[in-house]
Amino acid sequence: MEVHLNNPDLRAKLDQWVAETGRLADELVEDAMAGYFDELAQIRGMLDSRYDDLKSDKVKPIDGEAFFDSLGEEELLRQRSLG
Image 1 (cartoon, rainbow, N blue to C red):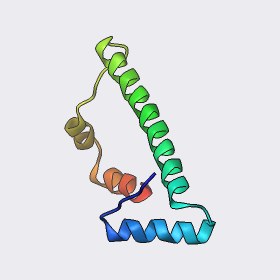
Image 2: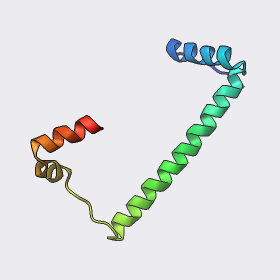
Image 3: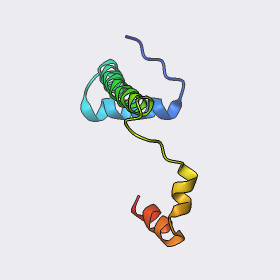
């Protein structure tokens, strides 16, 4: 596989990983892509499940604005500092 990276920062990161691990760039890119696709499939599955729950009325959506308005300013600041 040929790897063409136009982003110099990304290329530098790849080169650094090659140097640190002793693995070929092709191997690292293949591993990264495999992990990306696995994660993408997992996220899509979760989103599809959540969408199905909403469509079947298994769960009810909440209004984001109303939720944050229901929090006091102190509570909102506390939540932000924890996240």
